[in-house]
Length: 99
Image (tube, rainbow, N blue to C red; front, top):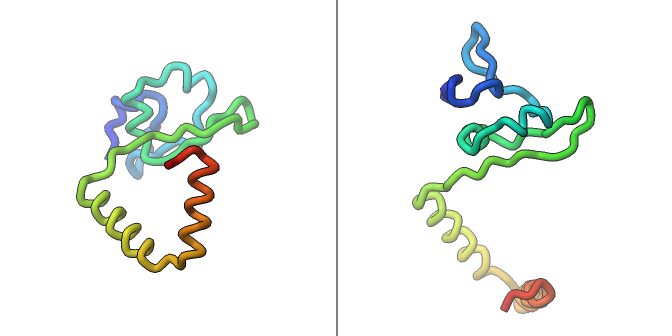
């Protein structure tokens, strides 16, 4: 659960507990600290009046256990690729400057 004091105006307290806003205004964005951004549980739209002008995406560090699982899943799936799929992946990476 997020601490309301740490997130300033980005959280309002209801009788049911702590609830997140559905968007952040341009003015609020200018005053947010790095800690307040990282405390956001998910991506938040940035609004200028009624127009959505961007998305604020907090970066959360994944646990080593989760990263090991992701890498194992990638390796297991990569072993199933056909030679044609591997060639297509190699072409795509070469187009993007990867070696």
